[in-house]
Length: 237
Length: 279
Image (cartoon, rainbow over all chains, first blue to last red; front, side, top):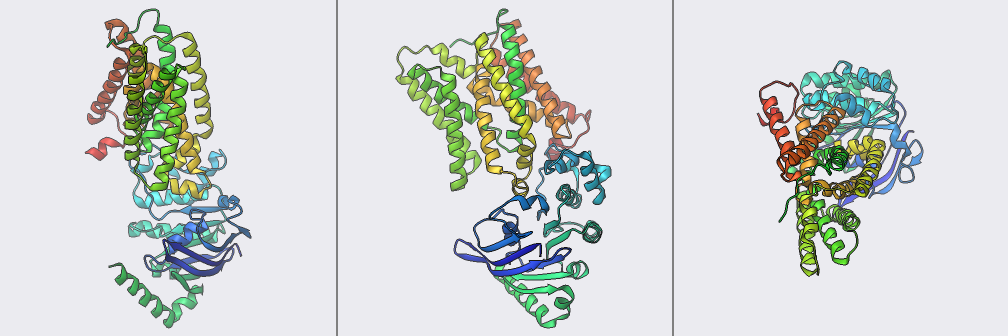
């Protein structure tokens, strides 16, 4: 097990964001985390990445409690929900990828760009790219230190269908060819069914974690998921 | 009030210190501009002015006091901003007003005050002695060395705090480092352009350079070239026409900015950036 989450609970000003979550992620997994808005998916990621430290329970990555050591972070690549890129930020794609690089090996930047099919655009300014292209750059950025785990927080929000398909194809290749374990949150059930081998269904509590086929073939679980999603949707409005 | 123009004898010192200060302000200013802290240099300078006034009041060389006051007040307010979620522009305004207010009170209380000393810190001095030139070079060299070794981390935390944190970069420490560096830079540069005009050296060359450049390194190089050009031309104009040096430097930097806007608007240089957004 490369990630082990045990009894994770998070309170934001007295309101529970995550309540007693426990599950594990095995090497090579392509885990789709689904759940409505406000279900706690981003909070879970923030805790896993060490960005949010006020929680109860333990999170272990490669057997190490992340509260004890941040060393594991170099083995986890992160692609944020929305790339907030200032259009005027003067940095090329190559520079953006190099920022997170542990070494000065420019060959690794080229390799990372090759993996997301962006190598011919390396010297373009990051602000000139479309949102879809920027997200591919952020995958390359996450890949440059050869991570064993890739964490993606709703990465295709606001991206057109062509770039979405491209994005999913790249993720599939990274998982099968590069053997990178992927943890990915999404609203897109079709995409999760197509790509993920495991599913975690979250709505503050974890009400399903297991094989993808089991989730999508179980009418009861699917019904429960759509009911919860609807409740959350109505609650938000 | 007397404004100083450069004299023939003071040109070598003014040029030497002016060039190194321009390079330093460009490098530090680029990070401030990209963090939308353009007026932070100004606020630091005003709080440093409080330190200058305190130094003059107690009779200790005011620049070192100014340095300590600028850094401590900026770090303190940044900590308060983080803890109480106060916006950056409000922090700038607080630093700005408090520094100047404290300075004015201390100056009004000082006996035997030489107004010329105060003017030098407000508007810059055309005459920088050898000792000060050496100090400027040593301090600037130290800051540029620190920037050389930390620029990647500073750039990453400027580009995206969240991602930098997730990569294990100590983002808060980087912010404090930048503030401390900016504080020292402001105090060094005060001698050349004074408290009131200092932000021009931080902002104008960088904003002009961003109109032309595509990469971060390119932006920094172009900005440094613009800043050095503005300083050298400013000093020459000041000597030639016997007018205030600091104003000349700032107006040449502003002219470079206006010229860059015209060049960009005419489509003579093709890069993405601010004009495209404005259009």
